[in-house]
Image (cartoon, rainbow, N blue to C red; front, side, top):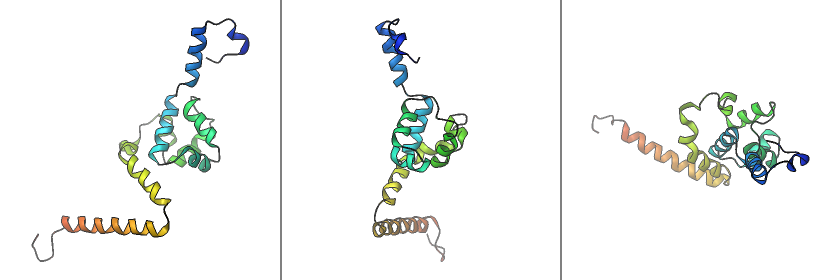
Length: 145
């Protein structure tokens, strides 16, 4: 319910407070947008830069509106690497992708902000762990395990 100044005179305090809480409640779209943004390890500012907007705009989409303007939906979907149907909640996310990878994506975002030398060290460590795991899983050439 959107209230105009002249409407307030005719409403009870309870109705005004209820209208205010409806305005400030998060929509299903806003909740989904926030979850997807966080799962990708993006801040509101980072997402805003990608879509060509402002942090205030992203906050507004997450907390105030039922849906953003139509022209913004494909931009948000592309930035979050989901389909527009997934963003709008028409189709569920594939394989619960965000739930499974939320912490991993957050950590890789942190790594991407480190100096190149530190990134190389981390990638070398990951490669060493992967080689070790691969060696455990494949039988040796001489027939012994």
